Image (cartoon, rainbow, N blue to C red):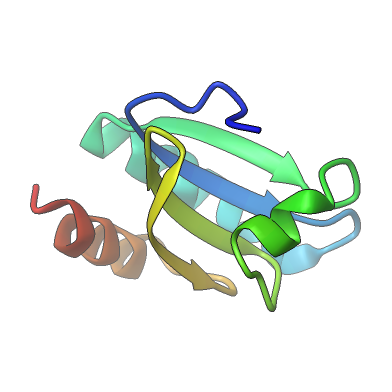
Length: 93
């Protein structure tokens, strides 16, 4: 499945009832806007196949993809400034 992921996208993969997932979502959305990335939030409860597809060990997981292919990923809550630096390093922008 490619989930319609074209171009560079920032994915937040989270679970229900996860406080860290709720806290990181606004940071992911803000960083995606800043860097001109499409932001997509997925629930592992509704899309359990993503765990295997991206070899996820923790949630939340943040995955940077281009045309559905993983460029980089990180997991856990990421403060806005750290997430910005991470995306900048991985995209070269």
